[in-house]
Image (cartoon, rainbow, N blue to C red; front, top):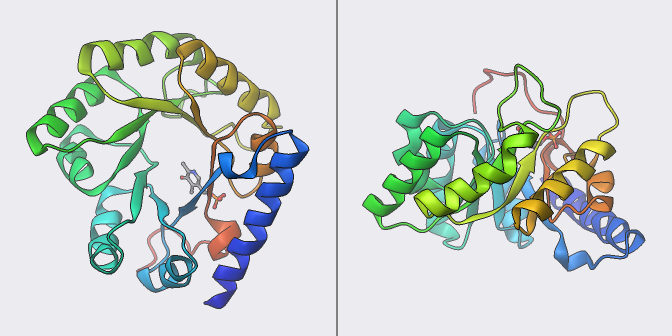
Length: 227
Ligand SMILES: *Cc1c(COP(=O)(O)O)cnc(C)c1O
């Protein structure tokens, strides 16, 4: 388990190096530890090392895993980075501090209603389908700026940035550069981009948060494996 804390130290050093190489400040890039499929015990060495920002891609899994850890570490900041169905919105608003997968009008409206109903103030990212892939979630690039404006003006959502997952197996650099341009046009400051394979590239293109799972925790167990 201490290997996980060592991985974090190593990654933080690589993040700092990539930041400096890009003429940026290391502290301007946050590490989100992507916990999906890994059990609560795997979180403890990271929590002991001071990590507080964690990502999950499924509401049900987060609900099973985090309330007990939060009782011990009340300042955990939980991010939803996976697709959100409207019938899970109430649970998501109760569980997460940040939702990074706002990608359509209906979910934006329901999230705003739930925040009001529960008296919760969350932060949000708009997810962009940066490679315009038919099977993938996210708002299309040409609609992004208008959608951000709409979420803010009509629903009052606190949209802090954009999030993307570039197409698999392609050079991610141009996609990260496009997300950075869209964020500037939309007037949002945060860019959630870069995963275990490409976070250094993402930092060169303005990432303010990288989302790392396997580089921290090791290879994920196959889908459907028990926690
Ligand atoms: C799983 C996941 C990650 C982390 O992926 P790794 O390649 O394991 O670092 C990041 N972002 C999203 C949206 C994910 O679903």
